[in-house]
Length: 202
Image 1 (tube, rainbow, N blue to C red):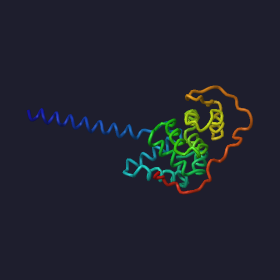
Image 2 (image 1 turned 90 degrees about the horizontal axis):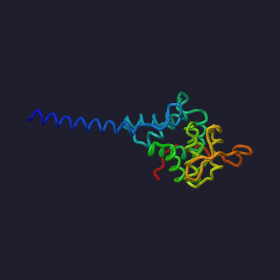
Image 3 (image 1 turned 45 degrees about the horizontal axis):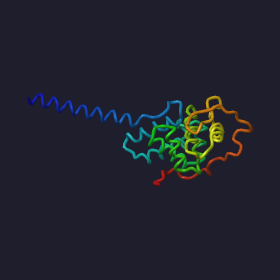
Image 4 (image 1 turned 135 degrees about the vertical axis):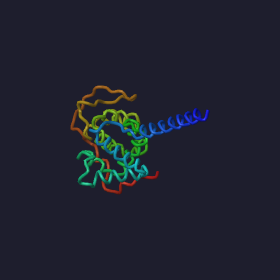
C-alpha cells in the first residue's frame, strides 16, 4: 500500500512538474520566425527573463544592445532606424508584444495606448516583422485611428513589400487597392528621436 501511495504521489508530482515546464515553455514562445528582427528581439528578451531578469529590464537591455552594440545582429538596418527614431514607442511596442505574443494584438494595443504615435508604431512593427505587415495594417485600421488607405501607405513607407499587402477593411479583411501619387506623401518621421529607452510605468 505504501509503495502504491508513493508511486501515485510521484506520478502526481511528475504531472505537475511537466505541466509547469510546458506552461513555462509556452509562455516563452515567440511570434514569427528567425528571419523577423522582432522575433529575434523577443527571443533575446525571453532569454534574459529565463535568467531571472524582470520583463521591463529585459526589454530595455535588449533594446540597448540591439541599437548600440556594434556586434549585435538582432536588427536589420531598417529596424534599427525605426526603433532609434522613437525609443518610447519601441519600448511600448515590445511591451505589448511580450504581453500578447501576437503582432495584430500587440500593434492594436500599442496604438490604442498611444494613438498620437501611430505612424511610429507602424514604422516599428513593420520593420520588426516585415513578412507580417498585413497584420499591422489590419490592426491600425481596427483601432479606428487611421483609414485603410492611409494605413496601407504608412506600412509601405515603413518598408512593407507593396506586392504582399493590401488595404484593410473595417472588419480586418483586405481589399485590392491602387495607390496613386508618391508613397509616403504627408507622412512624418513619427518621432523626435533620441531619448532613454526606459520602460514606462504608466
